[in-house]
Amino acid sequence: MKLSFRLPSLPVAGLAALCLSAFALTACDDENANEYHATYFYPMSTYGIETYADQSVDSIRVISSDSWTLENSSEWCTVSSNGQQAPLSINIPQGYIASTRLDFKLQPNTTGKLRTNRIDVVSSYNKVGTISQLLVQYPNLNITHPDGVATGTGTEYAVTYPLSVPAQGVSPSGAKPYIKFIVYAEGATLRSSADWIEPVQAAGFAKYEAQSVELNVQPNPATEPRTATLTLCSNGVETPITVTQLAQKAE
Image 1: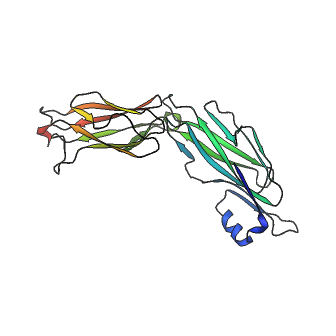
Image 2: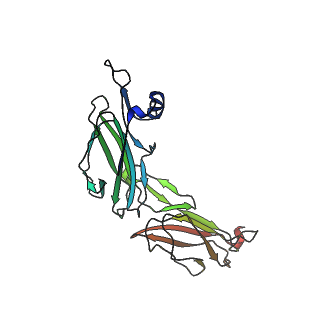
Image 3: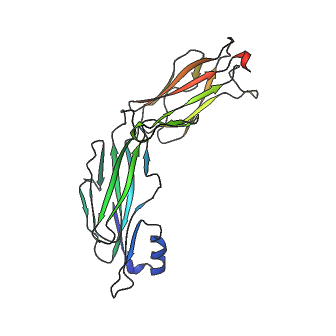
């Protein structure tokens, strides 16, 4: 969807303030001192467009006062606008500014590696040139508790999720351990590798919504810690959570 409106309807001071955060902004140096050119992504993020392994769609907008083009060579991510896939050529009449939505269609990331796709928008105004935004797809699902431990860089980026639970199975106040996550596809499941720890809910999770799932944990009768794995699966991607239950002697 592309929305357009005429620049003269905006106060010059307001337009300048709007564009100060853009990566590409310039004023003409000819006789028309009130002519501005700007092209930028909205919203902008220092870390790029962050997506997770089970995510299949996302979007961003390009705000521009000039016509622009975009090409995309990614095999796992397609870019489209208003149903037309890249390469895209967006024509913006002189004197207008347009907000154009870019839609991303992603394949699930089953590679176990972080992958990226650089989105390059080339403005027809040569003083603006090319602006870029990085689309990142993580190799893991979006687990927010327990905290993840990241290792490696680049495509070797990986994250693990360790969770420690009390020997009695609950905290001194009686609270159960829990995990939190967001899934982006229907049909996600949560399973346990051991019968001494079971999630209260194992399926039927709503997508795009934060889920908090309590864990039923039996007391550990042993004198040594024990471990189990909780596995969150969504859209063909699995992310394990390694659970360690303390021993009676260790507390």
